[in-house]
Image (cartoon, rainbow, N blue to C red; front, side):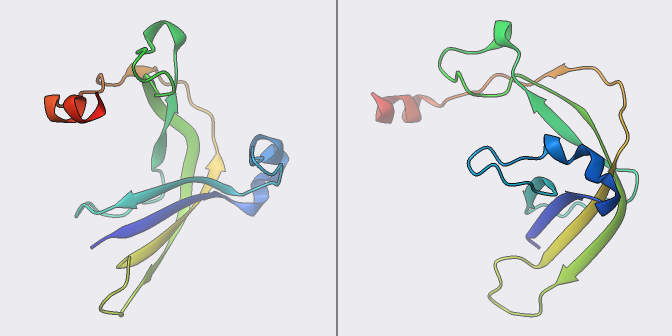
Length: 127
């Protein structure tokens, strides 16, 4: 079942709102992250923390200058989860999951991401 998972800041986290401004409009948002999940894994539960992605300059691949190079377990922790399932046969998503999060900083190491692999077929098309 395809799931649309939305991580949003709990309304009690308004003191951190200045960190959640949309770059293209300057408007504030409570959406922290969105995931599209087609796996059969269970939905996130309270205590879950989603990963943050970072770009560390010395590790940037010149072929992919905007790509993330590292990730870490993030500072936002899921406190409650709401799941809405669809009964429609042709729905884009079988479930929409809203994970409410609180800011709970942790110290976790940056872990390198695997290097981006490009198949030879794709390289031929791009040339």
